Image (cartoon, rainbow, N blue to C red; front, side, top):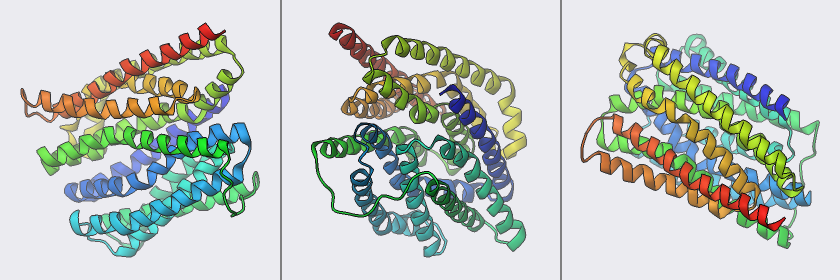
Length: 412
């Protein structure tokens, strides 16, 4: 497990560097307001399909228990078709006519379809625990996006966010192709057939819906910040947050939080089912130490170097984003610890508790923002409200995780 996580950190780090190069190039070649609109449009569009990632943990847990990949996959397929249809019907018209994304309709259609295929195949390799493929995707995806952007902008001469959409479409299609080819060597594609709704499948469906809602709620916390900035602040503030702050914050989440759900959650599920409570305690201790160390390093690097790095990488226009990032960095520890606590809660089968935690976090973001807005109109209160959302969620998740641990101890 430590080797797998170490590989994940290495591949993700390289992927982040490539993604950062892409964002840096885009910031220098594309107009600021246009770039902010592009990332906002992609966020709104991808949010719908990313909800399918919520199926991942329930697919892993159910397949580990039943090995019934055929019924699990067919249930997931129905939800995938439904989400793609809703995206086609509602999201694309919104992007075209409300957001004012002036790009050909078929760019958005192909991006939606390719992202849907990646979500389908990505959940499958998670279910089968093809960890090597999962790790390689973190490196392949930014490589393809960067490569296609260079081809579109310099090779073909496409300008504006048209080049960005081309790179996104072609990069996503490339990732889907890689997963499809690599997975075929390890596992066969489950056949289409009528779903047999056993008790295990009913529980899987219930957990999948709850997990989807829970994952959607986790995304809402960051996207609430975007909505608040769009409503109360300027496009310049929006670009600062989208291009720099959210980008770097999501990089940190990709590097240190996603591996917790990919690797630690399945391990916790195994340890809980086999009653290895001492191993769980040791794993928790190591996670807390690691989280504190990562957050401290993140804060020091941000404090000492971020301002000059932002200016050099993104240009002087984005310099104001430094202050917001500086406020967020020391509290990243709560993002990591929340991920561990939620993993333990879900591995224990308490999917409703995890959903409640995410909703409470979003509620605390809104409550904190409107309370702080009574005293200040600064853009910094958006960062502070996000911080209080994570801190409040950690307090609740800590208490729930401790309650579960005590219940297990008393049952021994």
